Length: 429
Image (cartoon, rainbow, N blue to C red; front, top):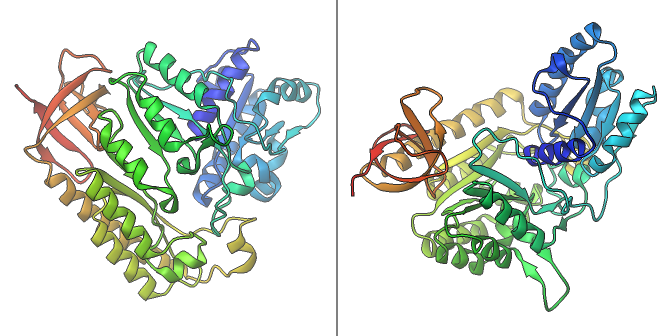
């Protein structure tokens, strides 16, 4: 989401005559676009601010701005470092940036952190700054109304609101005409997408089919799905369209009903497992990834074991794994104690990571000998003699360099693997 927001910000400012530079020493304005969902993200921002503080000592006229989710709770998040900032803008205030910049240059503190109930930036064409020119992100909705007890997003990004489906399809078509060959539809909970009046309403399944219809050579991905909102109709749509990628990210967070209730996830372990079974049945070969939080308030060893057992049962191909960090404003921060000792959190997280590395290893091992249509994204970071791309299951494949350019599909037969990467060769038909 932050990457998508940065493209929107760039578009707004370039239309007003500003030029982008990647060299901080040449900049008149430096923006930090932030996330607040986890504590380590905010700690990185604080460290980055100290770097820009040194730049400002050399160039007192340098403007420093904080944008995004963290901006909505700046005083709490930054403490004494807040005085370094000349401009603060929340995720719904990007259109106001030209005015805020003028205000800051006049010597005033420029702040807009008001959340909107209708801002989607649907009419703004993002300026793409991706390194490959092959893959792009399209934000289809903003905000969240799930109010998971650990999550700050509803308080920093506001209520759910969806973009006009026609603008999403048009953006996809424009990207295809520009040479992009894969788009990822983004939302805090894409499954709850709704647009249009009753009787003409477009839901996420309808939208996905419309976007897939732009061109069969445009791959479609999406993130993130909520387990309570992933109907069979959506799974059948994925199965029926070759260019909708066979990869679903379905955050579990925990395998314990006790923890799921405390987290306010609005599903049970059994309901989650039912969705996994449906994915396996309707979309054979679909990869499944997840999010896991360990060490949430009141988590017992039995809760932890249930999470491990769910992972073993689901056999995830990949997972994002975190230890719980309390976020201000959330229900957990207001009503629960962060009462799991840090050494216990670290030990449980390590056990989860170790298990997932084994599961990823086994998943990739099963792909040896198989052939996958692979979208070339660019040159391998480790070797100029190799290229890399991803298959429909969102797995990275590395293979000897071909004459084909990024954005081209090639058939790769897997010959070797690691827990993170598939290694292969061009398949001769």
